[in-house]
Length: 151
Ligand SMILES: [Zn+2]
Image (cartoon, rainbow, N blue to C red):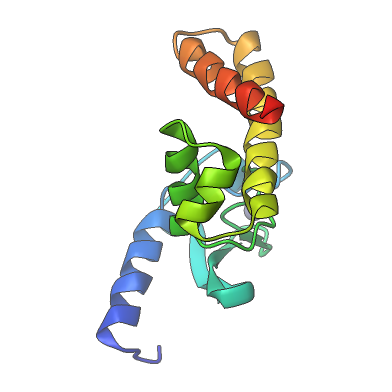
């Protein structure tokens, strides 16, 4: 394999460790239900500004984004921006205030709120079927999303 800079090598190592914890997202694949050290491999970063990671399943040979099936699939924002946005909102800032602090547009913040909202709905639905304690945390997130929608 081609050697990169030390930073690239370090990133590769991190992604390799991460790959070992991932499942294949395609439900017709054996690796969909079991993780293994060589089931999934890291391919490369991709997307605008290379903000997302591309993985490949060694069983079915299909590639997928680590954000597939998450609230962030297809979202071009880097992870640190997204976590800044959610942190700002979580601390009680308005959408406008968050946009100003994080230096993104108001519509970007709105789109993150919408993504998290519809994802929380799906997660809530899923958890209601297999009810357990974390439900109250989801309720809090939901409450926050509702409140923000009204502002
Ligand atoms: Zn697969």
